[in-house]
Image (cartoon, rainbow, N blue to C red; front, side, top):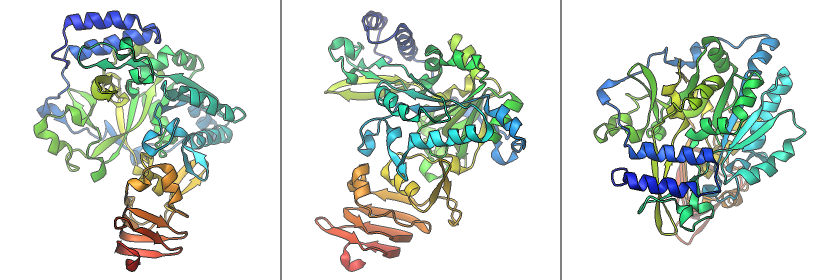
Amino acid sequence: MAATATATDLSNLKTAVAGLDQISENEKSGFINLVSRYLSGEAQHVEWSKIQTPTDEVVVPYDTLAPTPAGATEIKNLLDKLVVLKLNGGLGTTMGCTGPKSVIEVRDGLTFLDLIVKQIENLNSKYGSNVPLLLMNSFNTHDDTQKIVEKYQNHNIEIHTFNQSQYPRLVADDFLPLPSKGNTGKDGWYPPGHGDVFPSLSNSGKLDALLSQGKEYVFVANSDNLGAIVDLKILNHLVAHKNEYCMEVTPKTLADVKGGTLISYEGRVQLLEIAQVPDEHVGEFKSIEKFKIFNTNNLWVNLSAIKRLVEADALKMEIIPNPKEVDGVKVLQLETAAGAAIRFFDKAIGINVPRSRFLPVKATSDLLLVQSDLYTLEDGSVIRNTARANPENPSIELGPEFKKVSNFLSRFKSIPSIVELDSLKVAGDVWFGAGVILKGKVSIVAKSGVKLEIPDGAVIANKEINGPEDL
């Protein structure tokens, strides 16, 4: 599409966008800026021969970080420099839920948001600090979130919300905004990816307010990553070394081969995403031997540096074109990712963190892991059971019958014990009794039209089950 759109198209687009009164002037100019960059065909590919593996100075091993200061006063001083920001723009639709994904119950009746609030409140109470929580909502989650955060009014935590930008979807045929063609509902718009966190933080006025309170660093993470808790060792390292940006990376497993990785490129540290990789090198990119780490999207960024770069309009992250279809109309949405901003910051580093800091809940199979005896809850943090010898979590594949949270919950009387499980595949009309124990490699696939009930207290180890006769 970049090749076919003309200067006239851009001119027509500017006129149409100027007439969209649902969005601010900042949003209009940000959007036109993004489209202009996309049309200019800025190079997305990297020169493969220039890629270098980052040294330990650039991607610092977590176990080489200095210990956290011992004194409570020093820890309070550190925490008072910090703000926690959760990306809260996503809906729970893929898991069959309405409203923001962060209000799905994760464990013990507590939602993602409940756990986040608990964690920060615990820090504030323990050290007498004031770490605020910022939620970046999208227009999809804003109204619901405003109502939900009211319940935390009497908690020891300051919560601020702001909206990321709202951009119009582009009609592929004529390059005009969908809302100017009569589709004025929510379908006409999109939030332009989490790379938008930096300009939106600035446009909302929150950035200046935080700087005036003496805040120095923001810890940005996805609201559905249960492993993204405040880490004092990381914060202490960044403050001591005056790093403007830090991306937490962790060793790849076969499940993460598509995740972006950090490289050294022309003297700077840079995120390399699969979309930027020339076709002939994709196999190499996916290799765990060559590119050993991937981006967790836990990011620590200096607030003054964000202000400097946003004001200079210097954050020109790689554009991710995302084609969609709305009511039969082919549309395009242009997005950017926050991790790609790393190359614009001075003294940017990665820290190679333990896998425990990456525990995203994207599907009910992840929910099964975190609701099981593999984890416990402590002060809002999900802690892994030390009884499990294998450092990797079991691989879990649940059939479409389990896709929605409500269906998933109704099919388990209680979540099975999986401390000794290696892999689990479940498909068909399967129902689990209470106190079931699963070990080794287990496959439970009900034949078509057969209701398969796993009895209470069943112990299933290294077994394939296709019907009641196999139990």
